Amino acid sequence: MIRLAIALLGLVALAVVPLFASEYELGLLIGMATYVALASAWALFSGQTNYISLATVAFYGTGAYTVAVLNESLPYPAVLLCAALIGAGMALLVGLSTLRLSGIYFVIFTFGLAELVRQLITWYEVSITGTLGRYIFLDLTARDIYWQMLALAAVAIGLTAWINRTRLGLALRAIGDDEVVAAHSGIHLARTKLIAFTLSATLITLVGAVASPRWVYVEPLIVFNPTVSFLTVIMALLGGANRLWGPLVGAIPLFLLFEWLSVNFPDTYPIFLGLLFIAVVFVLPNGVLAGLDDLRARFGRRGK
Amino acid sequence: MTLLHVDTVSRFFGGLKAVDQVSFEMESGTIMGLLGPNGSGKTTLLNLISGFLAPSSGRIIFNGRNLAGARVDKIARAGIARTFQLVRILPSLTLLENVMLPAVFGHRAHWGKEAERIAREALEKTGLADRAGASAGDLNYIDQKRLELARALAAEPELLLLDEWLAGLNPTELQEGIKLIESLSGSGITIIMVEHIMEAVRALCPRCAVMNAGRLIADGETSAVLSNKAVIAAYLGDAEDA
Image 1 (cartoon, helix red, strand yellow):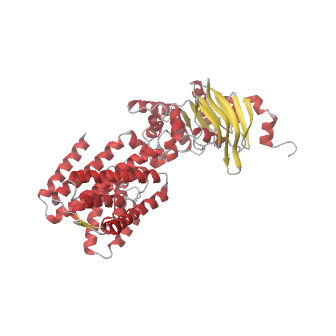
Image 2: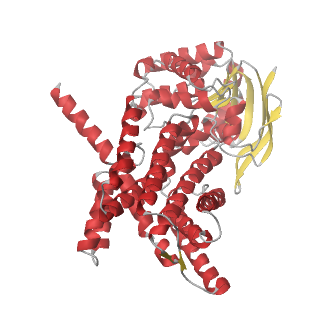
């Protein structure tokens, strides 16, 4: 109960911040909220099941592109609803065909999926509509976008917290440990994974949709940038992908770090991205939060 | 009442007949030892019954339903639980969570307090109750074996498949293990146990079946089966070979 109160207070405080923030700071806040939402939504499926998905940008880009295509013909809430439905439909289709794959095959497939979607949209735009690139003109301020993104991040974390307390959460953790045992305990593997994957992908699609008006001009090469997928994975792993607050703990410092790096070392910053990826996997394979727990346990024992 | 009817079940791996036209029936509440030399097809037969593998042909009738080739989780929910020859636990979950899984998703599908009660009962029976909150990854080998059995029990199964569950125990643990299985079979669970330890088989199983090269070569009262010529030949070789 106290934890919930603290989380809600934090949310209210974060919602008030843009009233005092400059345009630049607001941009940073939107970026942080975006990556907290992405990493938390990603961990909702991948963190528990250990199915590392690199398809984040496939859904994120689809969300952005849905807004780009529909923003002039439908009211904004209807556009978001369409994005969510398209994301969920795509996730069901992809999930049904790939969740039987295990380990490395799943990783490679999801990486390929982002490229496939990008190429499909490019092909469609060039050969059917005859244009590449679209404009998004929506009457939304940066503050509106920030509040929407903050709400999405809250939903992603809240949904994870709720799932952790349900049968679905227990089933997902069992799958992450050993699918054979999970199945022998009576868990319907395909259905369990499909539900979580679809929830996660739908949220990610919505993040892309909400973020898109910031770009104004959208084309496949911009919105299907694979760096988004990699950043999401590193952030979630850094904080601890199987912890409720892990993705948030990883996303905020890494977003700020990459923001600073991309301003100061615009050409070489992907090198830092790679180094960091390696460092996280070697030094903190279970994330910062698990590392802190280990430290606490070690010092606790020494104290006694 | 017949609980399980394995009806001319076969499983081929390419040209290898791992299980070859095996048939037997089991009454509810009975216990049967499944013996045979290494590679004779015992574990494969258990895998066919638990659904881990699908039979190439034949029927497996459980409680009047043919489960041959059904999905593993469906078979688990029908009331069949098992342990694995190579222990499989969920290391990142607590003992209680490990054991709660089949109580939640299995045969009777409980949730909340009831699921926890059943899980604690199963931990109690296997002597792990005082460590319910510990992480399963920290257990030693014998306790992992206990945990596996507790997990199978929390499924409240009608049929329990034990794949060399007693293997690797020291003499004291073996006596405890035998007592534990005895109390289970007394509570009405039907048990098939694959086992190499003859002491345990003699103590626990009034009935035995023996497999060799995929075929069932003997099935009947234990002492009669163990003195059966074909069985002795399967283990020790024919007189002509020697």
